[in-house]
Structure formats: C-alpha cells, structure tokens
Image (cartoon, rainbow, N blue to C red; front, top):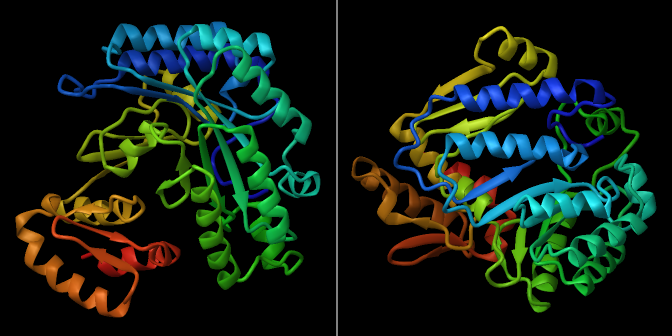
Length: 359
C-alpha cells in the first residue's frame, strides 16, 4: 500500500535457493574490511522471521566464517507481529539475536486494514509478550502516523499504549507518499486525502514532547529510546560509516562507493547462480558528495553535524552558506562551536534545511 521497499509474496518454495544465493554472495564478497570493526548485524527486509531458524543459522555461519564478529554487540531481526511463534523466536534468541524490531505501525484495526497490514492488534501484544518471556531485552516498535483518517487522539492513544508496554526503542515515522505505491495512486486519483503539512508538523512536535516526557528522548528525527538503547546499526548509516549488504535490493557502502543489488528476486538468483554479480548500480562519491551526505544525515541526529569533519577545501564555502541559511531559517538551527544541529522546530523542516545547506 504505502511502502516502496522490495517485497515478494507466496514464494516459499524458493527459500532454499534464496538462502543458498545469499551465502554464495557473502562468500564472493571482495570488499576489504580488514580495518573495520563489525559491531552490528541487521536481518531486515521486513519479514526475515518467516524463515526457519536453520536458514538464519546457515546465513550466520557463513558471515562468521568470512568476518570477525567478536565485536558484535547488537544483532537485530525484523519481525511483523504474528509471524513467528514463541518457539521460533526462542530459536532466534538462541542463535545470538538480541534485538527484535517489530513492524507494529498502528494499534487501530481500521488503520491496519487501510495500511494492508495482515496482523491484528492482539498479535502485537502476543508477539511482544513472547519476545520478553524468552529473553529479548531490546525490543523496538516501528510506528506510523499522519495516516489518512487518523486523529491526534487516536495517535496519542497508540503512543500511550505502546509506552505502557515499555519497549526499549520506538521508531515513529510520518506516512510519506512514494511513487509506484497503491497509496500514491489513490491520492493522485483523489480517492484518499493526505493530512496537510501543517498538521503533520504539529503532530511531529507533540509526538516528540509526549515521547520525551515519558522516558523516550529522541536521538534522531524519527527515533526514540530509553537511555542506552539507541539503535547502533542505524547510527552507522547516519554517521556515514561503511557497511556490507546482501540480498535482493540490498544497498552497501565501503566509505567511497555505494552500490545496490537487483530488486528482482528472480534476477538476483539468476545472477548469483550464473556466477555473476547481483549489483545493478554503483556510485563513486566525490568529496562534495560525501560532504552533502554528512549534512543530510547529520542534521537528522540530535548531535548534528560535527564541524571538524568538514573538509578544509569546503570550510569557507560552507561557513558562508551557513550564515545565509541561519538567517533564512531563524530559530531552527543551533550553532555551537564544534557542531550545528536543529531545534525541534527545525526538525520539522529538516529536509528543506539540509538541501539549502548542501553545496
């Protein structure tokens, strides 16, 4: 309905081939990681919990064989409510997975139906209780707000019910229109009306206030956590650290080059099984590209942009640009001696400010 991430349905028969292809891709990877300290693993894509634990174990063994995982402290598995039984969750926990990220999205049946989510509200609580009872002491809830038909009262009630459960981390994203999705077509055909930007901005500020007053301070525009439970894996993305990625539509980064694999599962399998690379696109970042990414990602975080990381060749131009932007976005930017970050109001306009600040 709303997500343009790659997904497939009803292809259980291809799982063994898929897992074998993932392992083959890992074994063939030639990225030099000799000076990396790998400290997080993230099994994403929305539904890896549908895989039997034996498949997860075989993928993990191939990673352990190829890379030094002695520094890994955060090992996340994405799971939608109701997908994995208590026994399967226990098997995952026994494999060393210590963080569960649940795609909850909403606790309102009508909104779940609108988002074409197949789980029930009851399954949210059941999956969460199962995870806690078998030893998952780091659980994230993914939530969505600013959904057509959603009122602030409904969203506030959702947040309070979630907070009562005391997950360690909450991600709260505004619903955005993505080209190619069913939602985009419905809005284009004027069958669905998205909330006004002013309303979304107001909800953003009220959401931050509600979260932070209940022990979930934000550390990034859309992410809140109990102290010490910030998602280390996502922080690597926002801090422009290198990372490996495997599987259809996976995106990787080695510090200079970004690449992504074929989105099609069938094409991915064909490429791997024929001995070819599944990479469909590669981009080598210039120094200016890296700076602009530093700006775009840095402004998402409460810590902001570390000014010491601005390359010397861009410091004068960046400084001049910053003076202009501070006047244009008065009250939105915090300029300390060593960093710049956004106020809460600034975060509402974070994307626009970031674009203005880029060189």
